[in-house]
Image (cartoon, rainbow, N blue to C red; front, side, top):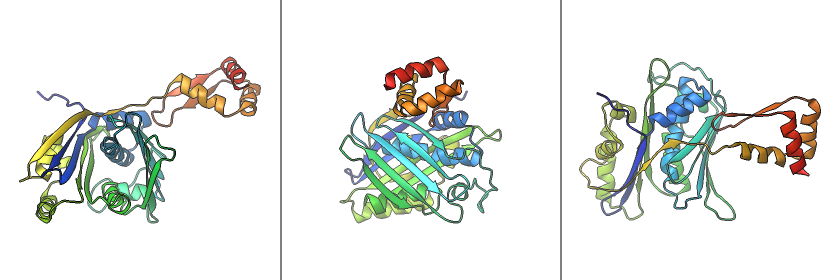
Length: 299
C-alpha cells in the first residue's frame, strides 16, 4: 500500500558544519499551485522548481516575520515567475503566463529554460525582507533558465557561498504532478579541500532529483546519496506547504489604498467588481454597496 507522503524538508550539517544541507519533497505543494493557476506542464515544472527552492531558501532566514521573494523575469514566452516564502516552510507563487506550450528540449525534457529565457536571457532577483529599513536584494543574470543552475550561480556570485542546487518536477500523463523536490548543499568558508573533492565526486555520479524521488528516496535519502561517505548531522525537519495569507480584509485594505477617485469611478460604473489574488487565484467579489462602504473608509 502506498501512503502519500506529506511535503517536508530536512536540514543538516556535514563534516563539523563545513557543509550545510537542505532537501525537500514538495509534490503536494506544487500540485496545489498547478491547480490554483491551471499551469501547463512546462510552467508547472518551472513554478514547482522555484517553489521548492523558495521553501528551502526561506528556511535559511532566522526571523518569524522574515520574507523571501524570488523573481525570475525572462524573454521567453513564460515571461517569469514570482515566489515568496517565510522561514517556516510556507510558500506561494505564480507564473506570469501560466499556459505556455513548448516542444521538449534536446534531452527530451520539459523546456523550462526555453519557456523562461527564450533566446534572449533574463534576470533572477532574490529579495529578503529581514525587518530592517531596507530589504536585502541580489540580482544575477539567468544562466540557463532551468532554475537550479541559475540559483547555483546566484549563491556564488551574489552571496559568495559556493553551492550545489538540484531541483526537479515530474509530471503524470494527465498533467498532474507526480514528483517534486530538491536539495541545496552549501560550502562554508572553512570547508577543507578533501570535503569539497568528495562532494564534487558525488555530484558527478548522482541521479536526477526526480529519478531519486521515483525510486522512493525521501529528502533524507536524497542527501545521503548526494553526501555518500560523509556523516550528516540532522538539525531539524519542517513541514512545507503552499500557503497564501490573502483575505477579504487584505483585499479591502488594498482597494482603500488605491484612492477615492478610483473607488468613485468604480461606483459610478454601477457594477460589482472581482479582485483576484495573484498568488492563489482566489476571487473576491465586491458589490457597489461594498465599494461605497470602502469609499467612506478612504475619506
